[in-house]
Image (cartoon, rainbow, N blue to C red; front, top):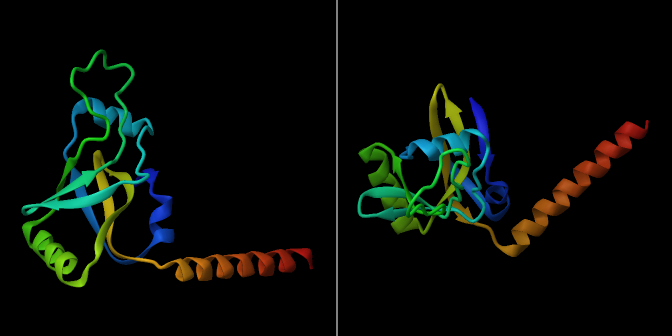
Length: 148
């Protein structure tokens, strides 16, 4: 399982509740571009349209050696492959509890490209400050232990 892209802001901006895995519907040149490491999940999110899930705002630039591609949109919505029962469960939780679906990382499993996303709740500003304080105190403690 080789990680190809991470969404670093996901853990900072959201409290991750449950993690899920989904396949992506991609074109051939998008697969090559992703496998060479050209993918950005910054600012991306998972949307629900009808009874389908889509990865929105993920930026996949065109593969440089693919030649001219007409009408290619790098940040178009890409369909996620998830079981119907999981989709129904996710739709229920998103609509009733006010949760969000946030992409965490894209990786390969065997020869397939998978997306890991999470059911998440947005953090308030004071929660973020608390996490920063904890991280700083851990760093100070590690630094103090190293000096001995």
